[in-house]
Length: 243
Image 1: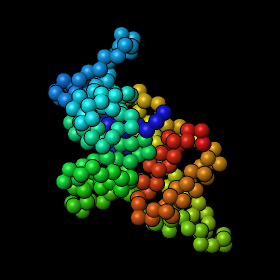
Image 2: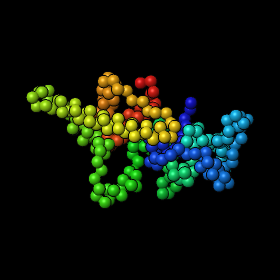
Image 3: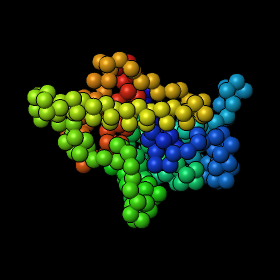
């Protein structure tokens, strides 16, 4: 196991959603970078070659500089700061992001300082920013602020004649359907790429548990969007597949 950091275009964790990084793309990067060299393991005849060593690592230890291509991502195990910096440079060439096991991102600021943070705190895509500048309206429950989501589903009364309780329940299902649509869209992409599908339970108990998770996240992060709450739920199941 251990701690892995990936150069990735995975739409679950990256601002650069797109196809998996192919071996051809990875090999092209290696060939064009004099600081990288192919690593030929003893098992290469059976498993092929997918690993590069960063020979310019300042500590000179090749064991600390290995990068390998796995399921469309470029992976490093326990990378130190110099290797993280190199990964960020390589990610730019591949139109990808550098993301850790726990969903945290790594990048360089304008002064070249290495920074990291939660993926949900990243700024919007350029396309989204352009739409906002043009005054375009972004439809969909995912763009709703978490505090608005909480307000809309608030059960203010148990008087059924007011229909507040049934309305609150219907709104919960409405937002949950947005989550299901999000998963469906991702699975459609993963089907084409050959990646394993994200499983979603249909039982009422699972649905209620998921909605409780979304509410708890929204209470903790009222300024985030509902999209971020959904991403957190996906991360939860990624890290706890048996739950």
